[in-house]
Length: 244
Image 1 (cartoon, rainbow, N blue to C red):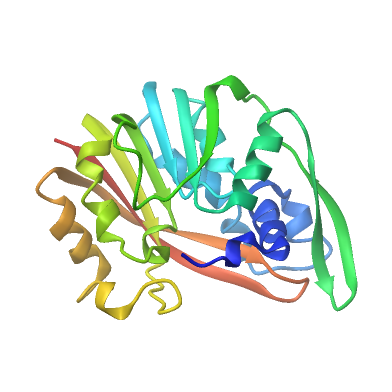
Image 2: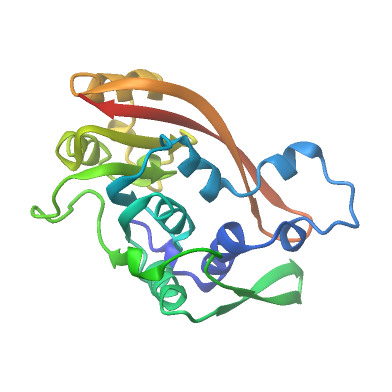
């Protein structure tokens, strides 16, 4: 697994991505393209694809700095967030403890702005927990979950099939699985022989279709600010599955 996600600069980008206010990401004095504004709050929007009813256990794989884990806890009794990055999990646990996390937003060259991340309002921290771990080698006794969320994770794993083959065990019968992936298969994360042989959706259906019904397929854009003039705008393919 790449150690890029231990870099303090990348941690700051993700804190802004998850917890930054719209005006901190897209200052209001600039006429930004409308599509950029619609791409904000990705970590919130992906969790809204679960059904409305309350659930017991939730699992957020590749939770990064934890915003989607918190959002899932609004309708789950307890949610466990797991990420491979120690830096991400350390920051998520700081927020869970009621602390704030200071970070620096790069603007231009040596210019930067100090910002502060805090947990979202209306969240009960006792309903979430964060663990450092490998999504391809989850503990055998982790149990089953009513909701599993994995956003922008699949195409960052060295062997994604190890996780795909585990999903039928992780998701309880009748439970929901929300997957999002920009399908950006890169050799730096995944060897080409581990990529889907064709399109990613057909590959997912081939691995999951025997145990899950595909409920929905849509797209969710997301925006990561690198500097005041450089952004990553990406379209993630989102699928919702129900365990038979």
